[in-house]
Length: 275
Image (tube, rainbow, N blue to C red; front, side, top):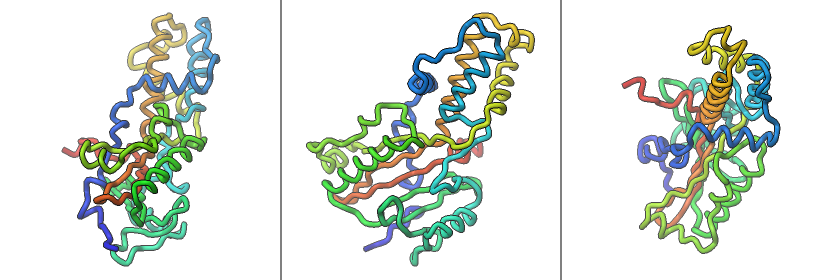
């Protein structure tokens, strides 16, 4: 089998972005917030400090962390230098490919895979995991749907849309849709940080509000300020959780298919600031 060096031959796959990730808006955090906690609401008569404590406790418990808790792959933060990441992955049992020492080979989630470490400004910004061997259309449908269900049932992840919509039906013609209709089969989830810091989150959110209001106004908030706080909290919540996407897609290779998985650290991804 011919080994494909994505960094040189297929840079579009290494640098791919999830299409649905672009459509997520900040009020999606509201959906996550209320889906997670149902009828639990802050009382409008509370003082600003109490409201802040309640909202931030809920928000942080719902997966936020002010100290840039980044995406993890096999428990390893997607961060640091490439050499450090490769060393840590080798400690997990991966080995360098005989074709490229920077590409690792091993087993992940029950499949033989190749792991690519992508950097930006010498910092790891992405781990890309590709199936080592392609399969036919029936097998890739089963593989994709199984992976979707694994993420749906994994408490470490959330989705901003109904994840069942990602599932591929049995009558779907994957080959025709990818070749003729240029459809991309993908699923996007967001990793929930394991560590939380309610005090740091509380302070950071308060500092954002202090750009617009005084200490006295925050301590004795009007209804308008309370609404502004809630809006700011939800925007803050959404911005934080969108930094840890984990997504996967089907790669079509002339009628044979692989799964490509991406563990992204959006803090380290190129944002145009170097232009």
